[in-house]
Length: 267
Image 1: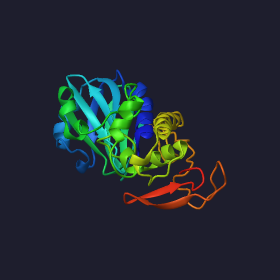
Image 2: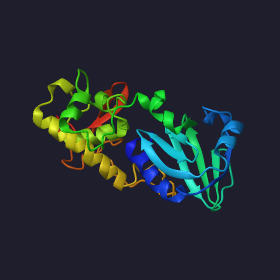
Image 3: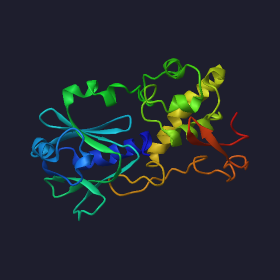
Image 4: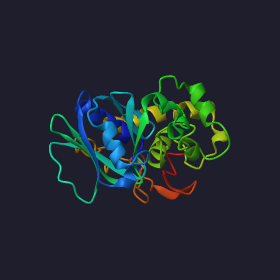
């Protein structure tokens, strides 16, 4: 499931390729992918508009268009957004945006991912966006505010992945953050010391930034077709040696999701 580093990578690679371009047409080949409008309605709204820029909110890409519209692409289980010179649609092609420079934006391999058209002025009130907490990389998310957002009772992994607390972190990146912070996924948040809160705050920012620099996890594909290069420390490595101490990575479940951690490095 693409999370903050992957969606930010998509934004960084898509933005320069589409900003300033005029959309010639929208072809929705899988009607279920467009949730807010019928394919014909969406095509009428989008055609002829210019792309002003590309933003991100949590796990959602926001493509801002002229005339006060925004095309929102929400990554759910999976999805690939590619910019190509030419596209021969296949069974995995969900939608195509044809641009005035001859390039095509292809939305493909969508697994519960969806496209929506919103009035830009109304974005903040859209339920899917209004319910999100602050971005973990927002400079205003100080240690005190970070601690306040994650306070309560329960496993720290569950707090990190609660989108109403922080927007954009899912299971993979929560586990990588917790490894960097030296904390086990099932650790009760109310037991963290002041020093552990500091480590967690710092690890959240540093790991997500490393993930963005690496282009996301290895299965993710950015808008140019390049795969992510992040090398997970624990995620998906159950039974393999810890890259730091050599102890076998433990596996279990926290909050109903698979969890991975080092029994020696994480407490």
